[in-house]
Image 1 (cartoon, rainbow, N blue to C red):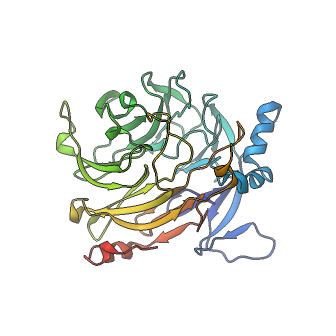
Image 2: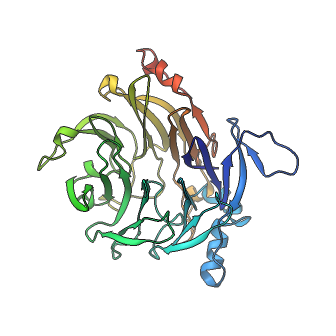
Image 3: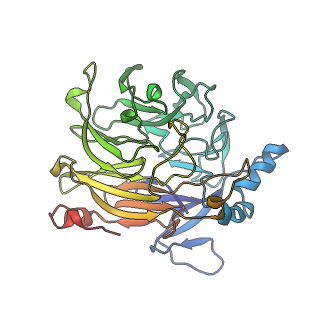
Length: 395
């Protein structure tokens, strides 16, 4: 199971192309409910369409649809094929080169946009879609250097799209986010030094806040009252630093972020929430397979462990507690040459948070707890505020 979205306190997830909604109902014979080891129960609500014909249809079925995806898993590991976002009036999903929208809670889906041919199997990154009231943004993630990535905008819940931005000097867009404090729209891009940028959109004008080195190689930023935090997504360094950029420096010509921590591998996803009046930032790292194309030797230096770390405003976000660690699942593909066209699989921990329910973590392609969705209640973070709590691993 892959954690996808939380809307109105309800968790949404996918298993392959099947869409699931969290339910409090007990399991009964003949239902399509799934109860995960962590205790959460999900009900199947629909399935995303498969490409109908041609070579593209055959390839898509083999890599994303049952039973074929299940047969590939033991060989290459669990790999992503779907992203999903739940909003007030609609749900969006990406599969390969296609963007779908649903108006009935995920039961039926209609394709409304096509992505570049070199898009990954899940279309874009999970951090590449956001909503700001009636406006939805989606950013492309082409894997080749010849395609100019675009940012699309929709004002009707994803039923129609317009090209909002084109970014010719970057390889792809990692994230598009709305700053809850300023209302500005932020973009992060990569992956070479020149293409690593933190961009701010205000009144339809774009400004490069920072960039030009791997310190600005960001997947998903975290917004706090006083600043923006991120962990570096660089697969070839021994450590990846965590930075904080105070809001007082955002308008500087050359803002310098402050290092506030470090982790052993690339940082991907971020969540921010408050409990007891204290802001918390949670980051998750990835255990990556294969090489980093931007590295001098096209290699990676991660330790094959995906982590979840957290810090609070009480410490100035300088004391990071490890909440969970998950070792990447090993497969036969790790010990042999993988045929061209077969997917490769990193290990991730997907994150989501809810003001009333706390943090949800979802280890993916891991040796333990793979595909589980686990809730860390807000009370846990109150306990972590104590000196002893900061040294303890939660799970």
